[in-house]
Amino acid sequence: MSARLTVVLDDEDLYRRLKVKAAVDGVPMKDLVEAGLRHLLGEPAKVKPEPKQFDWERYEALIEQFRKEDQELGDEASYPTDLSDVKHHLYGYPKAAERRTLHVAEDREEYDSH
Image (cartoon, rainbow, N blue to C red; front, side):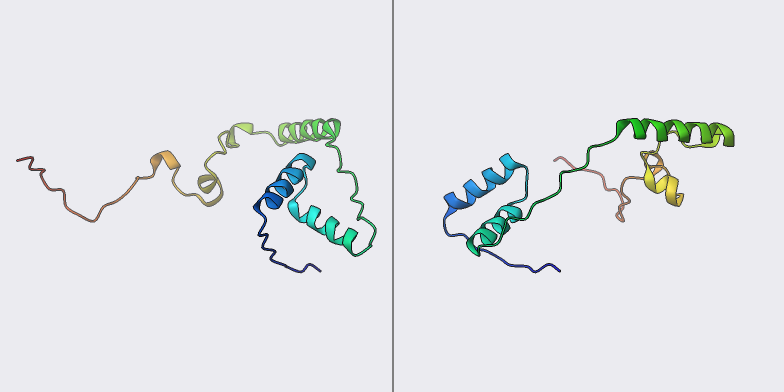
């Protein structure tokens, strides 16, 4: 369960130092505030597990496996190569380059510069 608390710090310098400390440590300010409250209440500090390291060998093995499966399925030419236009590929919308920019509901008028 998580609870919300709004803290208003009147000391702007304290806020800036907290923000800098969080940035240097690479943690959210929330974690530092929680650690301070635990210390104040006499509770032991919460130990966070070490972050998992990305397994590049496993990643490369999965990519190779996917390539082999694609070759087994064949007809690679039918796969989209440009996935930058998600709406087109997922929902069949016209490609972004083919869409009209803006439709204006007004008739064009001649510009009189006099």
